[in-house]
Image (cartoon, rainbow, N blue to C red; front, side):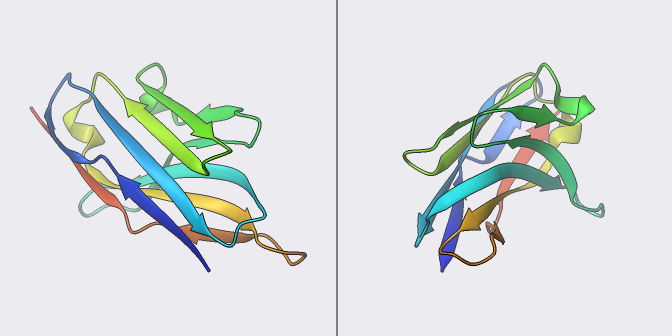
Length: 120
């Protein structure tokens, strides 16, 4: 099995910064795309950003220029640096990863989420 554990959430004032981390552990042959999603209260989970194993990134428009995604393939970790935070960034942030464990089909795993709250 594979576990994804997020950390780094918290409460911050608007305009502030937070850094989220996600670490994958378990039987891992390789990890493809890793991504962050978020879910605000009463809303559907939405895509935030993703990064390939070669560090090619994609961001949703609302976070471009404010968030930066990076990864460490040797440590199976991904980091989301969030700056110029806005109240609308509030939500539970989830990490996911497409993991190859053996010769079988790659599997998508999700973390449990970490809460981010931005006060105005």
